[in-house]
Length: 100
Image 1 (tube, rainbow, N blue to C red):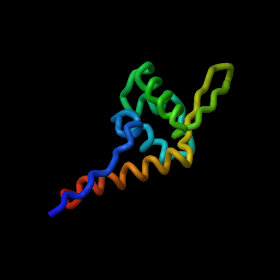
Image 2 (cartoon, helix red, strand yellow):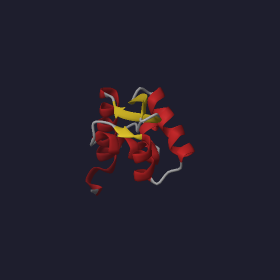
Image 3 (cartoon, rainbow, N blue to C red):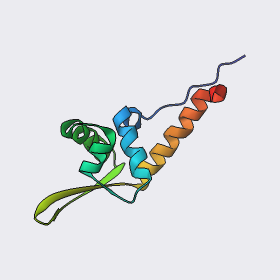
């Protein structure tokens, strides 16, 4: 009996913190840096590095502005990012098969 080919898991999405960020962003229109940091329990530097990877992959858009003379950075999931998350979930389901 041939073994089915294992699905590819997108390495950009596969990192735990990036998967958490994409999942959080999938449920909101946009989110502030501090909110994402706090929701994931991450440090500024760690989440910043992961957000940069997601931006580089065009999975998220970044908007930087000022609010009450303070810098404000907002993140939003792009259609490409939403598709990447959806494909990742489908690949996981295929990989896990009947285990779930």
